[in-house]
Length: 371
Image 1 (cartoon, rainbow, N blue to C red):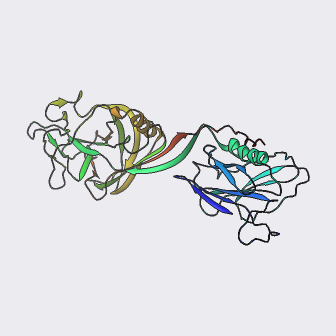
Image 2: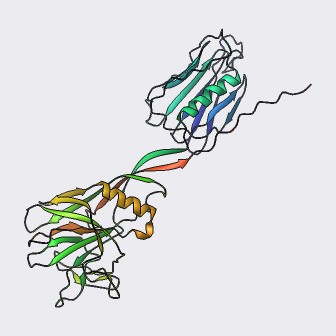
C-alpha cells in the first residue's frame, strides 16, 4: 500500500512491498514484511516514520533535518532479531537504511533527482516498531541541529542614488536625483564629484541572517581619459535624500537642487546640512577598485560584508556608501550609471538564513487493550 503525505514544504512517500505469497490482488501489505520509503523534498523539513505496523502506518513529525546531501557516516544499531535476513526493497533509493541480524547500516549517495532530495529506505523481514523507531531517530540525531542554515543569493538595485556636486556660489546648490548617471572624481575644471547610493537591505533579506559575501557591480559609461584611477566605497554616516532634480546633457554639471535633494552642502536641501561639506562618511575604505576604460566594474571585500551585516541588524543606520574617486590630479572623474538607467548598479548578497528546529517528540508506547 502506498500513501502520500504532504506538508507545506515536504513530501513523504510510505510504501510496503506486496506479499508474493498472498492470494489477494493489488498492493496488499505482506504480514511478514514491512518497509518504508521516506522522501524529503527539501533539506529543511523531514517527517520520520516512528511506527509502522502490519497494515497501517503511524507518522509523526520528528523535527527538522539538516542538509541531507552531505555524506552520512555509517550507523550501527543492534536488532532484536538475530536470525533476520535482509531483504532488498523494491524502491531504488539514493540513501538507504538496511537492518540485518547484526546491524542497521546507513548509507548515503547524492540524489540524482535534485540537490536537496534524499530518499530513505527502511527494510527488514521482521522489523519491530522499536527497531524502526531506533533507526529513524538515529538518522535524525546524527544530522539535526538546533538550527538549520541554507545559503541564498539575492541581487538588488539601489533604493536611491545621487551625486554631490562641489558647491559653486555662481551655480548654487546642484544635484541629480532622477538622472541616469552619478559621478566620482575631479573634473577638468578642478571641481569635485562624489556619488552616493543606498540599498534596502532589511527589506530584502530575512532578519537574523548571516551575510557571507557581498559584491557591488556598476557600469562606468564615460571618462575623459582611459587612465585607471582608484574608486573607493566609504560607509555613509548620515541619511540623505532624493528630490526631483534631473541634469541635462551628459549630466556632469547637475541641475538646480529641489526640496530633499542631497547636495554638496545638504543632506536634505535646503534645511538639513552635512556635518562636513561633501558628505559625512567613514574614513575606512569599504572597498576599492581601479577604474580605467569604459565598462563594468565590481567591488567586493570583507568590510563590505561587515557593512551589509550591520545594515541588516541595524536598519536605522543604513545610509549606504559614498563613491569616492581620486581627487588630487584633474580629469580623474568617472561616470557611472544609476538605478534610472538601463544598466543600474547591482548589489549581490550571499547570506545564510537560520531557523530553529522543532524539538523532537518523546516516543510513547501504544497502549494495549485490556480484556
